[in-house]
Length: 306
Image (cartoon, rainbow, N blue to C red; front, side, top):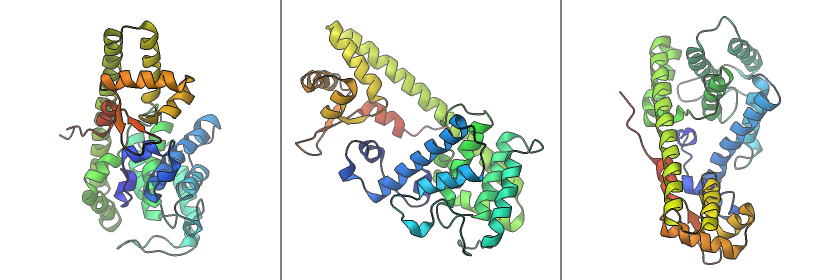
């Protein structure tokens, strides 16, 4: 959703296909996949390496985000060295960026700052106004929201994605950001931002609940309708794998589950009979199988606005 706001479009199927079929990888899929890698790298730096959320984390995330699919022209991981114009916005001159980003970093860790939710909303609008990079500012700025919610312990895992709300209301999103800059309408922006967080949290909660229910129900079906105890155990093991990789092949499953191709084919037939897996006609040599019940939940739209 964050990439889609910038006009970069792909599908969940494409994203889940990327790890098993690099040849079919498009530029737009790679750009979106970069976003996931940027998030994972930032979380590793913060959690495993104990690094505070600041310029080093942001620059590393930007370096990964802008690596493959963009080229050196976007100066991955480096603040811009030139002046730019973004629509009606003229961001600060390049020479002011280090000082402005340093001040923003101090505010992120200030004990005198606002409540964490409001603080993250103010940081987002300030980051977008500074516009520190040549490209990718919108995606890094929205990634920054999730990282701040994690660092403040409001989230334990990155399950809330306000980009979903921003994408649905992208005209209001950009208008609200501009009104802060042109009219000082901070309160209106914060109300819009908190609404985005609220609806995104409700969406994440309902989606997570539905995934848990789906997993429980499918395991019940397997134990009820598959008579071989050995096959039941193998299928439940396969199900755990499919919730991590819902687009797969016989070869991939065989490798991950450490079972023969013959055993995996037999298991896949049973999963197809239970309508858990569906064959996708990609090519005859390397058939793909899609975990459609799970993909349907991931793509579902929840009516959460009120």
